[in-house]
Length: 231
Image 1 (tube, one colour):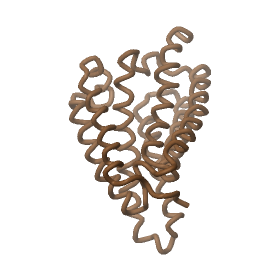
Image 2 (tube, rainbow, N blue to C red; image 1 turned 180 degrees about the vertical axis):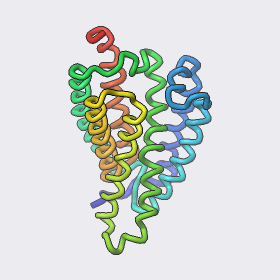
Image 3 (cartoon, rainbow, N blue to C red; image 1 turned 90 degrees about the horizontal axis):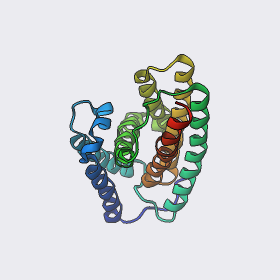
Image 4 (cartoon, rainbow, N blue to C red; image 1 turned 45 degrees about the vertical axis):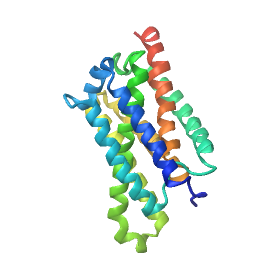
């Protein structure tokens, strides 16, 4: 069951535009350019964020009309952010334990203070590329089967299919040992699935905040501590 409707269209798009604008400003900082190159290569990070933001806007508009997704949902955003933070905390503890046991590479995280600018921007791009856009495409492809599957079942099929994308990409390009690769896939799948659940149950802002809180634990706090404790 989807909760009460979101705020006005103007308010929702204003919030989304503000998120994209902040990501764009952060992507312009020269100190973050080498870390964006991990993902974008020679592609200009500002251009990448701008394109992702535009694709996200189109996809969010389609998802809103198609299945009632919202950027902000009235009476639910704060609760959704709290739920997302709880999920992020559990997942953050899990990845720290895995890092201690399996040991991820030393240079896996961007250092401070560059991390404060890098992760909010790359997190927005990841949300759109791995979740928002694929979910839109998958739900559109499943439209002819909705009468047979039912709307709710079609939605969960789409969520599971989309949740596979990010862990598969990360493991394929990660170059990790087999044991670590298996753990990484399961862990990132859990993150993606829970984010999509939060998006469906609450809103986009709650989903994005889950990623940011997780990044705070893994890439910022533990990212700094692990260099002193593990290497």
